[in-house]
Image (tube, rainbow over all chains, first blue to last red; front, side, top):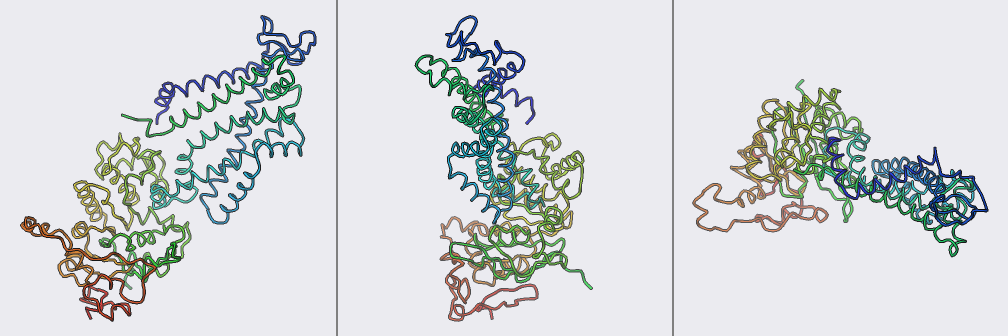
Length: 280
Length: 327
């Protein structure tokens, strides 16, 4: 697969393109907020609270008179941070454990998989609440909690897909060529399950953003004054009838990010399949 | 002192785990193979041919166990560690599989896959290994080999992929090549060319060949020594021509009789004769008892056959068969 043809095919894949555009929007918002927001995030002015959208405040202001556009831009930052780090934790540790289980089997596999069963017995958000309750609320702990929950998800899907690859004829052929377990894992198993993992990662990324929003909504995630889409939602709740737009805007932002990730994940799955890549 | 044979099996047993508990799928197989010698292993599906081959490569599936003796140039291999096996596989011993369509990794280029054993065992750089891979592919008859190094397996036909597998297997110049039904998945004309290619490579490099097949026609032309397997045992063995012209064991005779007649006498085809068949099927391994495993399908069966295992009868210095009725 040469990169040129991959890029060309990517441009011709509608959902990949749409997803990338949406993700770019979110990423640009996060980057922009680092250097510029229309108003300072700490600019609290009760005199101009709950203003409707206007020329000076494009999406209006919240209950404390803060500019909603500024909050949304800065909120993208925490969403991306949470998604990247939480999925990173889950992916690196989970995939390693899953590959290990599939390669060595026996008691190691049993132990690892029973451990993941155990963690699946608790609802994800409950575990996250538990962890943040023990370690104290805050963004770092929220990320840690979400990341920890991602580990068994990736461990399980990795082990399952890796097991299927281990039974393939080309793995037997590779063993007949004298390749050891590590080389086979690296050369044959990992590349062949990469597509599954990428798609799963995009889903988990979206779930992590939602989980962060949920934790922040419960007051266990991002703490004031650090902005977060989830906290904006939670603050909007009490004003739902007075100013429903305050809930709609962060909700739309979350939906855009999640949709973008899912579309990109879908697109990548198609693009990374070598059989689809070179149809003549 | 004479050199020990390249490969020597003594009383090899393989146990596999099934729904009926542990079952002996290979029951005491012994033979040896010299450099430059071609040996054929023949039998119906499920008679233990492939398991024997996998045991030879130390590649038995999970839950399967081998015991007995397996020696490579006089050295016992069954007790080897995985690392020892890894050094031997693909290097001194190589294997070709039945399904060329699935035995190549769809994600890697053909060049990288053929080059892999060279980098693994001979420590060549990627560039040097790829260049050698191109020569190998050229040698096995892939046209424009150098340009096609960067193609993926799905861009090749079944016959081409089997050639690629052969190139991969031969890359390190092995002493022994094990081919498990290498042509079963291919159509007849392609199969013939693959067999000719293997034969010429074996002669050219003087390696030993263990060819496994259920196809008498293939084995008759390809191997010097023929071993007929039934229910995990070698029931008859000897020089190919002798076994095929004067089969001794009732099973071998049955197999030979059930070949289409027109292969030997074309005029018989017009008479619309029904082919003779071997009644029954290979017994379930967990149901085997004391007697001869072939007893239930044999037309010559008597009490001795059912009560104890048949002795190995020496028919001539090079020929043996296991049957009560030959003694």
